[in-house]
Length: 88
Image (cartoon, rainbow, N blue to C red; front, side):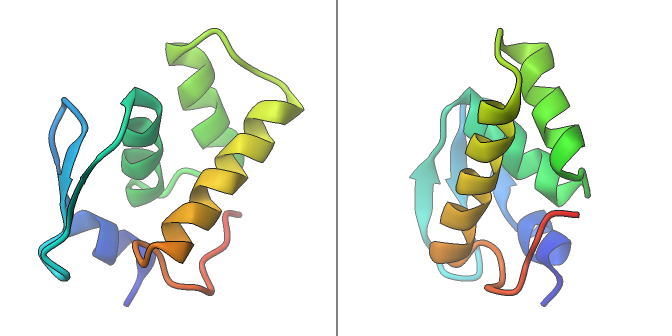
């Protein structure tokens, strides 16, 4: 299943409550997590995701890109993204 299709199935509330209808799992994410989930779903690349976070928060630089990649790794680990998913 395409990563964006899988993420499009998620119900993501503005407060960060997330429901995965495929597994029935629910979880919460903070504002940064919500931005990243929505950004990956919308097809943003690494630079786009980092930019979306830097616009919302006072962050930037190489650490930010590393943190975005770590969050994507966690999404893969938790089954929200296929193991083969990579940011372009």
